[in-house]
Length: 455
Image 1 (cartoon, rainbow, N blue to C red):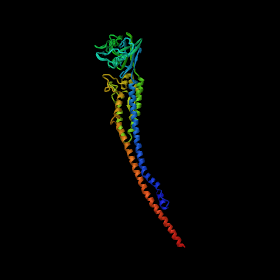
Image 2: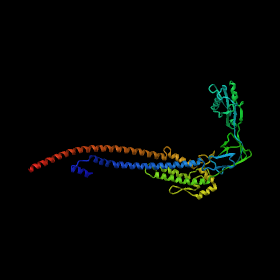
Image 3: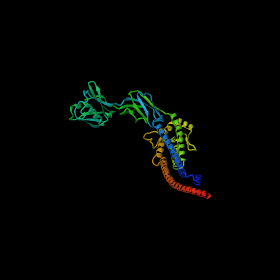
Image 4: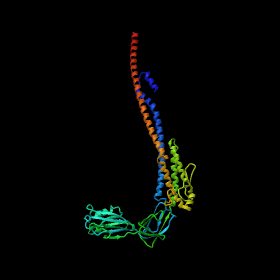
């Protein structure tokens, strides 16, 4: 650049102001922009590392929680005759906790009543009020000019909130009203026309309609112990099992039990270790970078504490360390399969409870959190307000905005600097042009004087 200026001034070739200004402004701007780009890239790398760590943590917690909720790690109910009884597992079922014989003596039924045939479902049936009583609770059904028809009566019953449903079916010669209550004896109902109602409404009282079937409870025994329930779906008798009574078969026993998914439990232990280690590596990568990401070590410590955390109320097998999971010197997890196999053989239920904890009056999230709940708690704390990941994320976002502001200010200052250079060197060019004209004139005069002296 110096040589170019010297050549321009020394040999009178003219000054390239545009190129000179560009070179000088670039010499000022480029190092600053390069530094800002480097800082931005470093911050973006931290943001990406944090995003990966959070994604791994979310995926870890969600996948484990899904396996627990969908029953993958849960003991599977068995039933000897599915035509009589259906059984599904709920949280807390364990293979060694229940086996029994069930006899279904009677299914729960809902009361139904149906009216005589009405030729026109939209024709007037009479006005007045009726009383619908279910389980001692009375509801008033009002029929007036706006709903004086079979359709209007059905709509009014359905809108009463009594838990009774009314429908209209086609029959030879017209239509019938069918009224159906909830299942079980508690669902028995009466529908009566009140005093002062038109006589036509009396035809739709339960005393005048035909009984389709009466309300009844489900009646069944479990190992000889009698039970009665208003519904054919029974969730409150066998811990961890939901029973669906399908058919009454008095005197015929149906055996129920459960089988434990030992292979899946063992595989899940191995998968847990593998996914944990991947998460650990992601966190190490993020937290090893300079800056605010170092606070992620708090999260690393909490995850590391999972190995020794009490996850169930079992007396001796209540931690991951009890089933052969340990921490290496690098902070990763490893599993002793020999120890795991031995524990599964001696007390598989205790191992299952670490992943699929029991849930009843004495086994709660406080006493038996299970690994999925404990991991969710760590994740929710980390991503929650002022959690480890939340703090780092906010810090990196603030850094990103700050760098963007700095870059914008640099560009503004360098733009002003370039304009100043353009102004200065434009003025210089004007002066040089004037000097050049003077030089040319003087050279012409000297040449003229020289020629005259030689004559």
